[in-house]
Length: 86
Image (cartoon, rainbow, N blue to C red; front, side, top):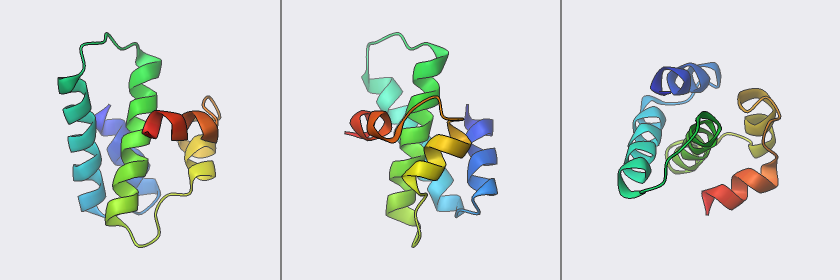
């Protein structure tokens, strides 16, 4: 998962801090939850953690529609990502 996040953030030319924060957010969430996650859940959580981290670290954060289309391959819509973000 982390390799995929590095690849995605590199394609979008985001800062290293964005990657480190997104990896931290994903790790923190997974350590605090008792749920069992399937691959699709982890993919969505990775997308949300990159989106949140990009908002904090980048001047121009990742566009939500580009995130869903390019990174998520249109498997999750913007409303679903925003719901998961909360």
